[in-house]
Amino acid sequence: MDFSCMHFYMHMGGFFMHSIILPEKLTRQLAHLAGKVLELKRPSGGTWHVGLIMSGEKLVLQPGWNDFASANRISQNDYLVFKFIGESKFEVFIFNPAGCEKGGNFEKEEQEQDGSLGSIVEQNNKAKQLTCKVQANNPYFLTILKKYNVTSPCRLRFPADFSADHLPKENLEVILCCPDQGKTWFVMSYFYLSRNEQTLRGSTLEKFTKENELQEGDLCVFELFKNAKRLTFEVHVSRATSMLDS
Image (cartoon, rainbow, N blue to C red; front, side, top):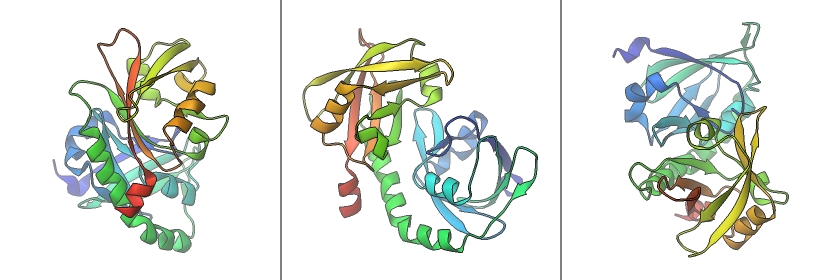
């Protein structure tokens, strides 16, 4: 493929502030960029560094994406056009639902991003290390824990595509286990029809986060055991502190 003329667009629907999944047809074309940090440029100024990771069979923009989305005030139903401008570099055009291009002043955000590049690279490296622990053919998803994931009343939302592909559309109890702890937690997951997704919540989830000393910024891979009699996830964790200190 001639990448010099490559464009693709994405509609910002659902929960897009934390991460976005690239279109399936691009997975093969951009798979060589998995594990790298992409440089996203805006026409009106500003550069952001965002990690591209492989989650299962999907390519996901995640480490650093929240900074980009927040700084550029990306809103529900906006459209983003990505134009390839060089190896690991894309220019991003943002349009509101009416089709008008959105711009802004990005000097401050660019300076903040320059200081966080090292941590984004480190998150990408840690993500690759964690996913190597996943057994072949087991579905999984990766998430960077937010404050609402680890503080009462905590909740953890499964990615919509993961819910659709692997989880039943009903309330259910799932089993969480951590390799380091040697114990299990039975956590309720609630299905929300309006969002077509599952969300973990409740006192046992809070117990799970406390007993595993999970913190905001920790990197977690939730690995689904396909052949288990009950819905079971093994949770692999890379600590935020170790990512900063390593």
